[in-house]
Length: 141
Image 1 (tube, rainbow, N blue to C red):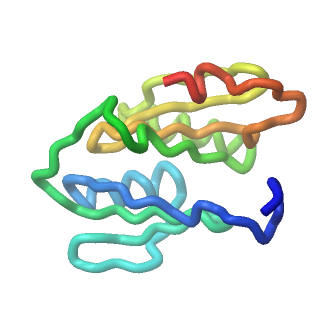
Image 2 (spheres, rainbow, N blue to C red):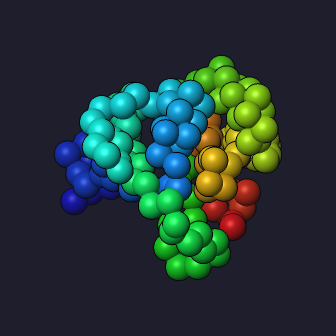
């Protein structure tokens, strides 16, 4: 499989464990513009533009271990600078905005979902034109 092959392997989605399904669903729908595609008693499938999918699974008493082996955060790509700004504003209105920065022509907005899970949104897509190394702020956690 060649890199960049449109028929190649892609990440279709992710499963995130949350404590309060309704609260988290509202967050991801309102902040990132995801829409409910399917739902059950303890899980919901959210979909975004293109092929992005996120499953929220409720486990109210699950422990949260930060800094351990596994996924640390999911990085989303905004479709435009205006969309990135809208997401920044939505995070700020919820008191969930933790950082806004720009490095190497890449804008980054970071916040926390209702369970404290990091939400990172960048624009433009990485790697951008002329990018020769991974930006520390995006991948250096």
